[in-house]
Image (cartoon, rainbow, N blue to C red; front, top):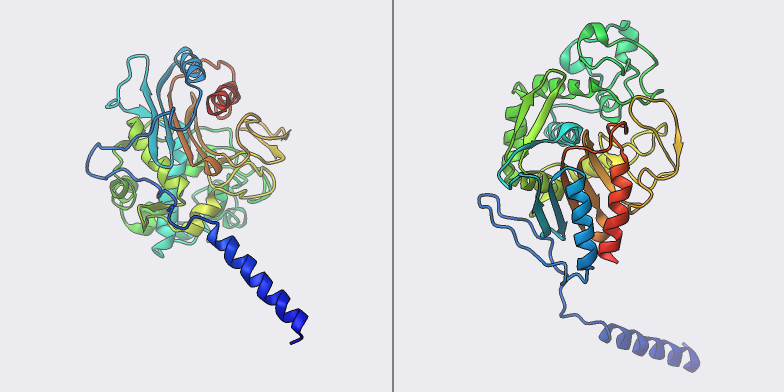
Length: 355
């Protein structure tokens, strides 16, 4: 090694050491907080600690009240920043998740797969038997569990009742995206593969492990989950951490990550029953129209959402360690029953709170 090269090497080592010394090594990153399972305790932080605009928060709350909101929670890094109940609703009251509960079915399906009971790439008929549709055997054999998760079964999406006579062919599985109730057959897949009624399996493998409360109501059209707001928030935390709860992997991490990514190219704004923001185009229920741009323009691009009728919402924003819960009724008459004007208006106002 030449003398000049030796000097350069030594000089670079000195700079490297100085650079490392300039970085504080005794300031640990704050660990993500998980509320205890068997108590109602939950750590909080204040909007002032986050330098949020309190006056804009008051404006946001007036909007929420006027929009028939029953409950509103904001979590940052797992801790409660805002928890409010409006219009006679209380912390102990249950409310229906509507289609936001589809994401509970996704997570439960993922648990069944990690336990080796199912493979989402297999045919649905491998688990619930043949002739579960009114299609030909060849058409039915194309429908996989993943097609149910991604809304690409190719079956008619118009009928509300999921019975054999209504499950008719429109397109080959995987070639058409359409939002419909046939996802319910995922519950049957889990039931038949596990030999356990779906609600019991869900309670034992997911709900009880993260301290949720609630129940599945067997409605006329499909089963709807009902719970208090904090239980919805607990699932939001689990989802934000890709299936991990305080160091325990409840749902396989890779599956959960994939469930919050584009599941197909027809509607890239849809994962495994999760809605995704920040994509270049999207489709909505009850139409085959393709819309360009982000699902919710005012919201962060990395946001994922569990969406239910009447604006039942779990908003998750990984870049901001945010989980936001909204339960209530709707004022957005005539809007699509998934996306509505509520979402973009809400995010416009919430951005002002954080800025």
